[in-house]
Image 1 (spheres, one colour):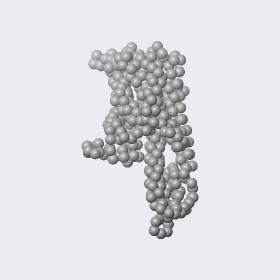
Image 2 (tube, rainbow, N blue to C red):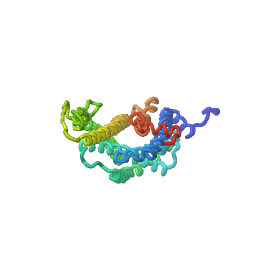
Image 3 (cartoon, rainbow, N blue to C red):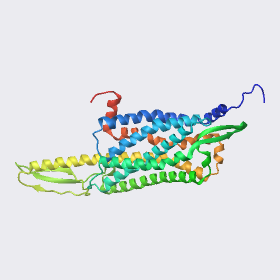
Image 4 (tube, one colour):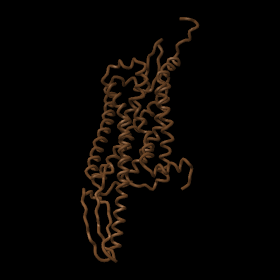
Length: 369
């Protein structure tokens, strides 16, 4: 060996690994920079000025926001550290803890979205039945958290320090699958369970919103279709007939009913009109909530498709693709595309909820009520 040549050390090899991971590091940095302030803003609004919004849907929304925020401040920094210490990760207990938390929060976020969508399906399919209360939603979330904790614990057992043997007889230390569980049925079975779980979440969301779409289409309320109108002729006190047009919530297509009410019925007509307007307002709010939940679900599906694809390809391939340095730089990004699901919700709320947008401006401009 040339005397002037620098010796190969573990730090040198780790730097080489780091250079290949720069695209992933940049991606994680951007996700963290966008996600932390975005979810912080949502928390300030939904736990502040919009705390008055009650119901199961808003309980799910607030919980999803908390989970997204925790992922941005715990999981993404851990992923960032792991990417920069591919061969120098020595803390086994920290590795196990963060792996468990990562699985727990990811599964929790997915199942919360499924629960929220199931609640929307229930409200659309049975609009006259008693809706799920905030308390019932909170209890279901607590039960879900306990179940997800049990599902996440095996990750702590299977995870650990993974020894990587490099050139010049140098051994690196990485946080991943523990050496003792490599090529065992336990790690394979657990990975399959998680993968199937995510696939089922995606499939259930597609199924539920297909049903919701079809139901709303049949009612004639989806995509701002023209509502049929109920025409009521109210006899006023002085003379003739007063005509008032009301939106028909029963969605009878092209149906007009003319009813003449004789006598002193002006007050009754006004009350009926007010009730009809209130119902119309509630229906518009319901459609807005459903549209928001639908877009959030679409974002979830699109963000998890690359992750699921990479996992399936990894399970079915022989591993030759990892020899290409470009592929080695892209695969870690694709397998972490699901993190986009945890930063996109603030943008969805801003675009689809005028009330949220107004509160955003108030918070950002430090205005009082």
